[in-house]
Length: 349
Image (cartoon, rainbow, N blue to C red; front, side, top):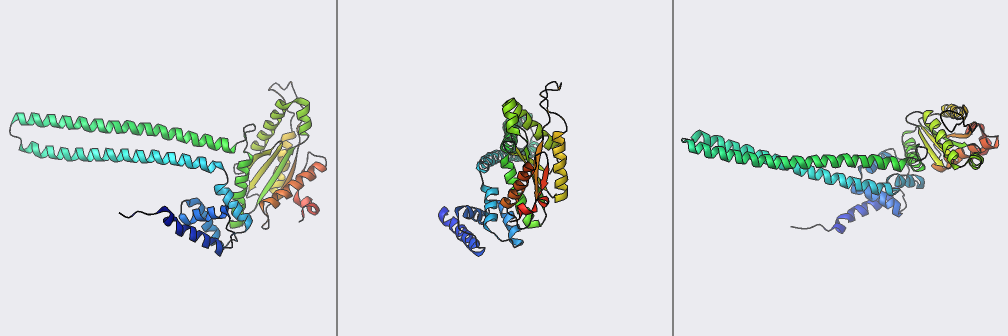
């Protein structure tokens, strides 16, 4: 039988990938080649669906979009870990399929044997022949039972393996995307969702808003009361932000005492209103070290910058405008929110 040379087999994929990139004016970088080779080879249906949508919408594959796509699908080690879990799941499914096939074969064989015994019973004329046939039937029944019972036990083990695998996936997802101190999303999760939202906003034409929030005088607070109390402040603010936002919003700790809030399908006025409400929630009551309230550290305040997506934006320009607004809120004395429409002279490019 003829064998297929893997190098020869992959050659058309590489050629077609380069051709597709050239047609769309995409530079032949290693990252871009990885994206388009994977698409042409059909090994990632989610990536192919995404690219097909972009192509149908006649989107220009500029440098920023290419970077977003690569980051989304190949950006970090999480993809490698997920591939390992997929392989493990594939192994379990294959074994289960083989075991189920084996049961089916045993039952089919047993059914045929019963039909044969039925024919032989009709021809029996002596009692000793009937006894022999009964013994054969008992033996065959025991053999079939033992075989199917062993396979059933194997499937039970595989069921436990699948449960453990599911727990590993859930734990991996939590650890990968959660800030362990505050339990809000971490920077990695924000950046991945931010890139995805940008791509979809370009494709479907809807907008979204971004809030940057910074705890006021956090360093001074940390130096005065210590890092343990500083951690308490971060957890407190994280909880206030989670409790004050809706399900589709993403609250993430961006770094240090700075938080970022991604607001899908949210217009600018609603984002301003939400930012002000969040700051009020944070400063509404003094922070205490325990439930008795006997040890109080005073009121915590925060400053916010708010901006919204524009068709001409890149992830960097939108984030910079939001950061400029946050800086302006600090300049105005802290404990306030500044939106880009209030700060036009400073954010115009």
